[in-house]
Image (cartoon, rainbow, N blue to C red; front, side):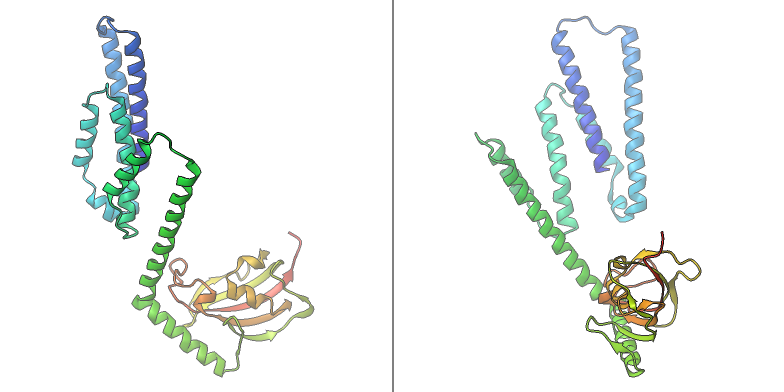
Amino acid sequence: MEKIMKKIIVTFGVALALVGGFSSCNKGANSASEADKAFGDSVAQALGEFAGANSAMQLNRMKEMNPEQAEKFSKEAFLKGLEAVLNADTTQMAYFQGLQMGLQLVNPVIGINNEAKIPVDKKVVLDAFKKVYMADSVGEMAEYYGRYQAFMTEIQVRMKARHDEEIANSDEAKANLKEGQEYMDKVLKEGYVKDSCGIAYKIENPGDPSAMVKTTDWVAVQYKGTNVKGEVFDTNEGKVEPMRAAGFVPGFKRALTLLGKGGKMTVVIPADQAYGLDGAGENIGPNQTLVFEIEVQDINPQR
């Protein structure tokens, strides 16, 4: 909705600028003819329909992607704001440009307040804007941009930390972590070897020691991935294709480097060496330990 609103405002502003330019050159001109009025009404109809369809489409997309936000969005309030602008004094172009800038500023303010949970005071924003805007000299734009970008980066870091904390404290993440630790203890008692990075493995066939996998290699590796309950979440059996060793999760990548061509192993990968708190898709939850059966069929094959 924000993007469409900006497009509509910009388009409206351009239209007003054109009208303003023409009217300044045609002061005292006769009123529009009936034909011009009819044409103007057709243009108005097309413009209104186009803008309305775009806005409706964006609202429908909002309903699909963010139902909670869409539920709070008022069509009546939107139309009230639109009508206020369309019926305002069109000779005050500076005012409309101020409205446009205000809309561009209020969106990040709302986003930071609601999503990042960081209180950004609109009055402080306005005062800072006025101070720079009304100054005799603006200074280096790079300085303002750099400071702004630094704060945006810090906001993202804080949001990620808060997101991770919320997930880590969830019942699912705690249960998966406990389950994974118990499974790791079990396989170590069964003779699995624990690597310094945290994975545990059992090599059935080390493969060719003169052709060990390196992280820079392309490998044709057959694998089957399960959770600690034995439920399969991924396998490429029967459809092995060369892949970059560096493209796997850290624990899988480390396991590959312990094998040569023809090598085979089972490896248990803790969450911090797999998909961590975020998980992956519907089948890998937060803090989930993964188990892979791996067989290196070829190293740097013809592609």
